[in-house]
Image 1: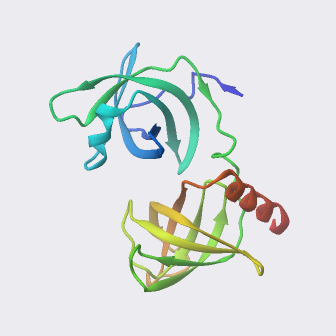
Image 2: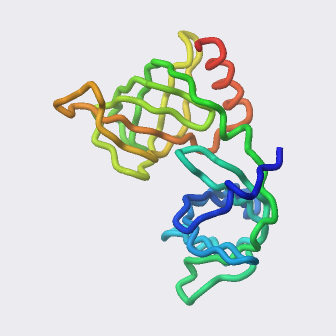
Length: 208
């Protein structure tokens, strides 16, 4: 499905992802739209991931809005802007494609989840409030920070557990917790395979 370029026009400060391959490695780099011209779209990348920019040629640019991918387009790195190597000028895509894998609707589901910092043995518990193929929202007493990456174990059914990585994209107060003992945290899934996404979609359909 081609998305009308009207509502998908990239805006400065839009969150984005760059997907690219360097040899056998698949990179997924967080970026921010820094400038938009008729021919170019500039994206800024924070250290240490900016070191990859000069090595990239073909990239997939994914615009992310409301913790979901709004659209994606394949493009190329045209040049690196400035001496710091942290901003890349991409050829501005002429059209955008809706990403059905990444923009599934959310389903209100209360599922047990377990969160662990990478390299740590401490596990925190959580309960989801909604789930989609792109991520989930949960209530947890862990004091998380924006952008943190966690090891997640999500119980999709009594017999099915999804183990993956996810990143914090939004943090808010729990509406029914006046003492603020818990946070309402939104996560996006990282590097899920097609099989794992299908597993989530099947669980959503069965439990909704």
